Image (tube, rainbow, N blue to C red; front, side):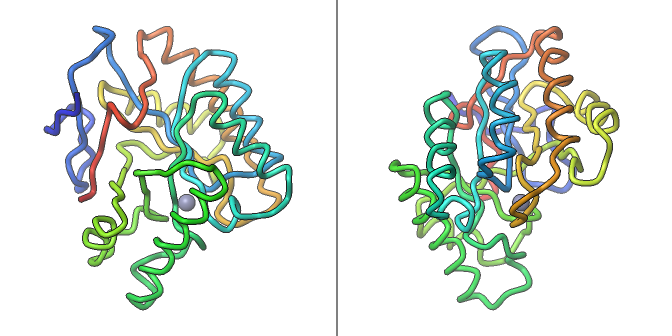
Length: 225
Ligand SMILES: [Zn+2]
């Protein structure tokens, strides 16, 4: 059911997101989280999603997912067990526009392989760190069988207060919207995601009250191909 077209949530300047037909009859959106997994912070987000029985997509950084710490493996398994979708966010979270082409391709390749090995399943979804629109992205994604997923609303949750993030996201929520928050902070081992956790706690019930259903990436796609 993926219908590519200019939905109301189309992000200015970005490739067109999808606003497919709604299966629920009401507005649908996609919740996404970048920069995990982190055994200390990711569960804080998962707890709220679980409480409200909603699903999201987690764009995992290979460097974090490939950590042999058993707590990391446990959190990846919980993400899957809870019904979320796992995707890749490169190996080392580099800005792909600022590294040599070979390094960028290697970062994509390595990230996908590492996330898949850690999760035990393949992934078809990818988001470039910083949303970088690197010229080589299209062929690199195609070679790896990845579809790029951009966002229509990003929270700036790494620097804004929760109330500010909630307001940003509430304004930009629309049918077909793809919301981007962060359960980690780039490669930080001990990130402070307090604003993100509080945002999710406030935003999810607010959007549910407004009639939104939370879809998975296989039904709502914003392709950067
Ligand atoms: Zn990121």
